[in-house]
Length: 281
View 1 (tube, rainbow, N blue to C red):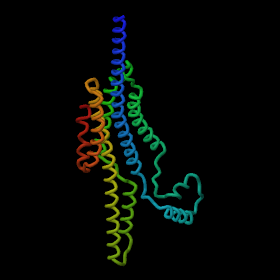
View 2 (cartoon, rainbow, N blue to C red):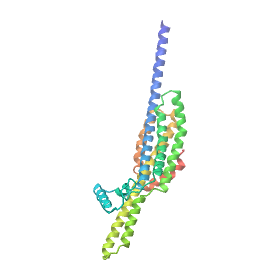
View 3 (cartoon, rainbow, N blue to C red):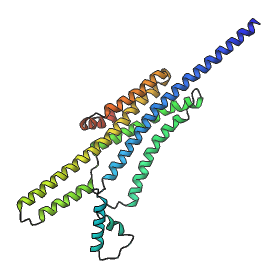
View 4 (cartoon, rainbow, N blue to C red):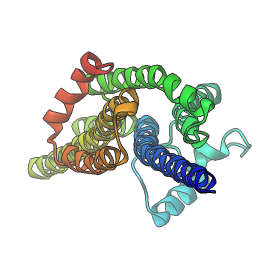
C-alpha cells in the first residue's frame, strides 16, 4: 500500500514537473514572439517610408481643392481640342507626372515581394509550439533566414544613405519658375529681386522637406536593422536564454528604438552606410 502511494506521488511529481517545464517553454516561445513582432512591425514601417519616398519623387507640389478647381476651369476654358479619356487626367492636373503603368506596377510588385519575405519570416513563429519537434526545427531554420533578411535591409539602407531619392517633379517645377523669372522683362529691378528671394525660400523649403523624408526613411531602416541584429542573438542563443532574459530583450528593443529616434541625420547616414559590415554579426 505504501509502495502504491509512493508510485502515485512520484507520478504526480513528474506530471507537475512536466507541466511546469512546458509552461516555462511556452512562456519562452511567447516572449520570443514579442521580439519577432517588434522586428516585423519595424520592417513594415521601413517599407512604408520606402514606398512614400519613391512615390514622392514624382509627386507635384500639393494644391488645395480651391486651387485645383480654379486650375481645371482655366484649363478647360483655354483647351480647344476634344476631351478624351487619354487627356482628361492632364486637364485635371497638368503638373502630375504620368508614370508608365508597367513601371509603377513593377515597383509595387518589387515592394510587395520585399514585404512578403519579412511577413513570411514572422509567420514562422506563429506556428511554433513549445516543445514540439516542428517548433524546434522552425526555430533553427529561422536563424539563417534572418541573416539574409538583415543583409537585405543593410543593402537597402546603404544605398538609401548614399543616394537618397529627391523630389524630382517639384525641383523641375521650381527650376522652370526660376527660368521664367529670369527671362521675363522686369521694369522694376527691386521687384525682380523680391521674386528671386521668394524663389530661394521655396527652394530651401523643398530641400529641407527632402532631407526630412530621407532622415525619416533611413531612421526606420536603421531601427529595423538594429532590432533584427538583437533578434538574431536571441534566436542563435535561444537554448541558453530564459524567459526573463527574453523579456529584458523586448524592453531593450523599445529603448533602442527610442535611442535611434534621437540620432542626428549625419549619425543615421553613418549607421546606414555601416550596416553592411555588421549585418551578419
